[in-house]
Each structure stands twice: as structure tokens, then as C-alpha cells.
Image (tube, rainbow, N blue to C red; front, top):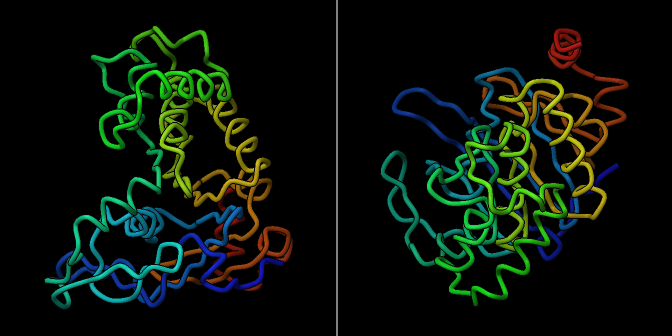
Length: 260
């Protein structure tokens, strides 16, 4: 079973996180720890707060209460409640560049080739040498199995290939952690398996990952720790064999029954 690590070994830590949209409270005091080299899966029904929690991790969403730490460094805030927002934009940028996110929709730039898509952020945001980035980008495209698509346009690729290109783009930033928000839900079952294989391979490499997924088999196979969210709270959490083999709460048992 995954043990709660100390701050020094954690990439992301969240304590008592609350997030609301106006009067609608979406997260109601959530704690999460992502130890270095571990895969944490977030499961739960639509509207349970999974994607919102993931977006709060890399500060795409602003939370109203609670602590967020990246590699032991606390995000600095100013204001309170709905007026709270990060106090240091440079800190936000630095954290975001170390937490690469892969979305449900591929979000590739249509006017750039696949290789250019993968290279864009390291060259433009991180100001890295283009020749060095190109070598790494081609390596990551090979890692996800689409090295032959480097000069293709996004519209020429299948959905599974586009999502693998998006994963290569995330990897090329060489982040401390990868955040996946339902990476297979927009794909047909056959194409979904292409992406699942890549995610499993990344997990086998010991990469730190947070994974929001509707695919219980993927969560069971890849995760070190699984968190089941229900109506903005953690209903149950634990190692995958316990969560899927011996769920303790009625709500988790019902959720798993409905997804089979």
C-alpha cells in the first residue's frame, strides 16, 4: 500500500482544498499527495470534481481555500475566498512548466506539423536550443510510436495518433509530473488501446502521473494509489487491489458495478 510520504519526496501535495464556482462548491476539502515516481488515479462519476482537482493542481483553476505545494514549495496566495488568486505569477509559470497536462481533446495546433507541435513550448517558453529540442522531440515521437508522423499535419492523423502526439508534446517539456485528464474518453475503443499502451509504458518507467480516467482497468493496472471522489469529497482511497477488489463503501461498490 502507498504510504503518505514526506514533503521532500512529493511532487504535488494538496491539503484541505476547496473550489467553488460562485455558490456551487465543487471541491469540499480534498487532500492529495503525489509521491515522486507514483501514479495516482482519480475516479468517480461525472461532476464529482476529478477534472477540477487536476486543473487546480497546475493552477489552471483558482481555489478558494487550502494549500497546494509543488516539490515542497507552497503556492503563495493573496485575497480570500472567491477573491483569492496566486500572488506570484512567476511562481505559477514555473510550476506549470513542470506539470505537463494532456487533455481529453488533443489541442494540437492545426497550422503546425506534429514535430513543430511537440517542439513549440520548449523552444518558445523554455527558450531551449531548437536543434537540441528537435532531437528530443523526435525521440519522444518514437517513444509514443509515431516517429513516422513527424512531418504530418494534425488533421492527417487518427484520434489515437493525435493523442499520442499530445503526450509526446507533454513529455518534451521534461516535466516533474504528467497530468492526464480523461486522455482516452474521446477515442473509439480500438484507438483508445493505442493510448492506453503508451500510458502504461510511462507508468512502467516510474514517471510521476496524476490520471483522471473512466477506464477502471487502466486505473487498476497503472496506479500506485486510487482516489474515488464523490460530490467533491474523497469517499474512499487506497491501493488499486483493495479499491477494485474489496471496496469498503457502498458508493464505491455502486460506482464500480455501474462501470462494469
